[in-house]
Image (tube, rainbow, N blue to C red; front, side):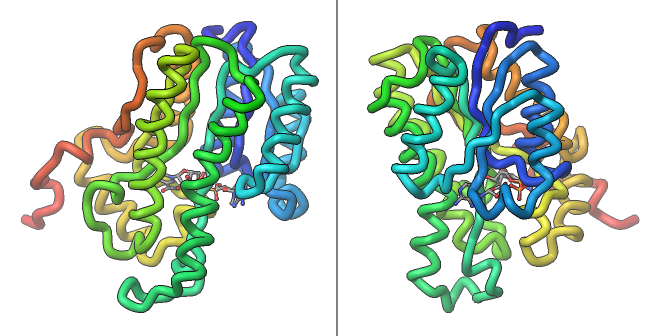
Length: 264
Ligand SMILES: NC(=O)c1ccc[n+]([C@@H]2O[C@H](COP(=O)([O-])OP(=O)(O)OC[C@H]3O[C@@H](n4cnc5c(N)ncnc54)[C@H](O)[C@@H]3O)[C@@H](O)[C@H]2O)c1
C-alpha cells in the first residue's frame, strides 16, 4: 500500500489493454484515490465507465489539447479530492499521419502539428495548468509514457518518434521548474512494445513486437509491469528521481545483437 493517502489523475485509459487502465488498477490496489480522464469521444466509445466503477473514480472528460478542458479537469479533481493532487499519469498518443498511412517522406504538416499537439504538447499543457492552478502538492510526481524511437530509428513509428523526443524534452525542462519551485518530479517511462489500441496502430506491430521480445534479455515488459513501475514512481520511495527518461523494456535499449535473433 505504498500510495496510501495519495491522490492522482490518470489520463488515457481506453480499454482493458490500455497501459493507463493497468496503472489505474494498480494505484487503487496500492491505496490511492484517483480521477480518470480521457477525450470526450473516447469516453463515449470506450469501456472506461467500467473501470471508473471498479476504481470508485470520477470520470472527467478532457481533450488534453484544450487548456480550458484541462483547467476544468484539475479544478474538478481538486474539488473532488478536497485538496491538491499528488501524481499525474500522461498516457496519450496518436498520430494522424500513421493513421492515414502517409509515408515518412510525404507527411502532411497539418496532421503532423495535430500529432505533436495530442502526443506531446498536451503534456506541457497539463503541467502548465497544474502549475498555474497550483494544483499539485510539494513532492508530487508526474509521469508520461514514451518510446525508444525518440532516440533510435524505427521507420514505421514515423512522426511519433519526434513526438516522443519532444515529450521527453518537456519532462526535463518542466522538471527543472517544478523541482526548484515545489520538489515535484517529472519523468518519462520508455516502455516496451505493448499490445494496445495505440500500439497496434503502427504498421508491422506484431512482427516488431516479436523481434523486440527476442532482443530483450527479459522479454518485452508487459503493461502490468509498467503499471508497477508507475506506482513506484508515484510513491515516496523515488523522491529524488527527476528529469529522467527511464527505460522499462526488459533490457532492449542496451542490446546490440542477440543470438536469439540469429537463426541456427
Ligand atoms: N503500446 C505500445 O507499444 C507503447 C509503447 C511505448 C509507449 N506507449 C505509449 O503509452 C501511452 C498509452 O498508449 P497505449 O499503448 O496504452 O494505447 P491506448 O490506445 O490504450 O491509449 C492512448 C490513449 O490516448 C488517448 N487520447 C488520444 N487523443 C487524446 C486527446 N486529444 N485527449 C486526451 N486523450 C487522448 C486515447 O483516447 C487513449 O486512451 C501512449 O503515450 C503511447 O505512445 C505505448
